[in-house]
Length: 318
Image 1 (cartoon, one colour):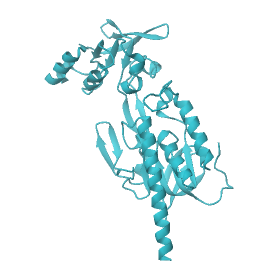
Image 2: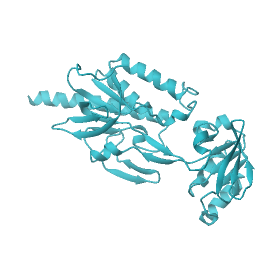
Image 3: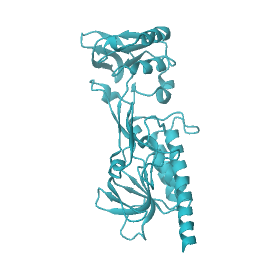
Image 4: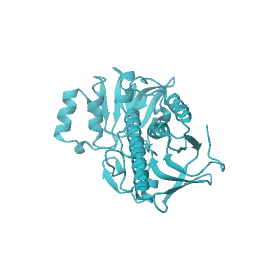
């Protein structure tokens, strides 16, 4: 790993804030384009709890930790620097420059910024959920559905949108129970009830008290009335908290979505702040690893082209 030192020569052309799939992908393209690039990585990937990732062609089943380790090795081959630190502030300087302040006290400068800070998952406060999250408490059927197929599923409702989750996971098991938990029966529409019945999903009202666990595996869902319903896997819907603080400091426009406020971006990830891109879960809730890598690639290629044309236009003016 290469860290930032006082002996580096000159400012970076691009600073990538976030060292997950999106940030590393952007850095790889920029490094291969011979752009002086720095990745600032706080080391807190969203999927750190997961033992494996799925649905990424040729990488299906790989552990997230191994994936990121390989990515860091790849960007180093092209002269990309990486520092284990956290960006705490970004300010716009004169011209097309930015200053990035790191928690460790260093300030680095760049002409372009890629924000790949992702999001954080806030789990329902039910005893046992956090402890088993990423194992037999999961949230994404496309990520983990195959591995728990045909088991007895539970779905923990936290909003009426949990009905959609229950319907989707019925593709992987025909034994699905929707625990309404904090959602009142009256909040379900007639269409909800008809679809749940058609999918064979059982609906259980009442608040969930805790998860039943034996021999380090989920065995059931226990309600506050004392009843326990045998289940082998539980799907939950974490509340997504976009990590948009740096973008807000820069004045980027945000738009409200059902999953939080995310930056307004164009097809390349460019925000409403010239010179600042957002990629991966920093720009949207539903970016899986493969999507995040794609977004990083697109942003990296766009930034290289933009820098090239900007420099050529400046040379023409001279």
